[in-house]
Image 1 (spheres, rainbow, N blue to C red):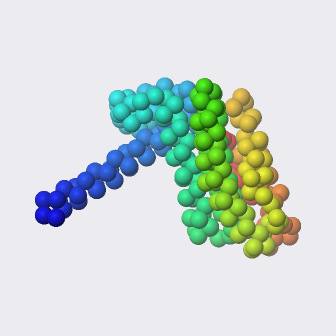
Image 2: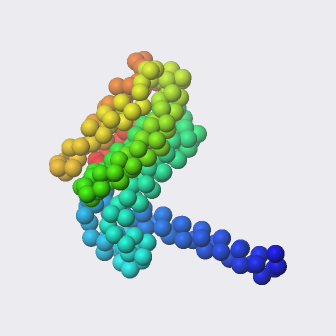
Image 3: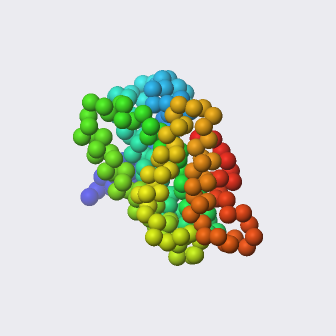
Length: 214
């Protein structure tokens, strides 16, 4: 390999890294707009949020379905990667669980509406749902196991049951702007905690304590 080849490869790597960062920034912007305005929000709103032209959006994602699926996968990966990080940075596993559930609630707001977009492609939706379960159930289970091992919550809780319960509590946010899904989910998470923990502090979960709207 000559010096020219090596230089070309070094140049290609930063370009590929830049392209990945740009695509991730577009997906973050799209997720924010979808959470605020739904999956049918105008592409120009996403472009404005990202600080780019609409042509840039269409170059990366030719159709709305392409964009929504990419946002879905992007947020699944963000939730999956956040679990170990939260365990490492929070004071307790229970606090990490509450923060992860907050992220999961935000993800579910974007997930609503996906089925309508993919109505003509049931196989595609099934594939995404399987991907969602494969990536997120083990992360939730890791957080639950850590909190149970620390004696903070009841043991033997199934991650998929908790995630299903959170999902059911988030449904009302689709049709009622005043519906406080995060508050209700916080109460659910608080109910997992064993009594008489926290040395006199409230057993209310971090999600419930914040009481933010979804």
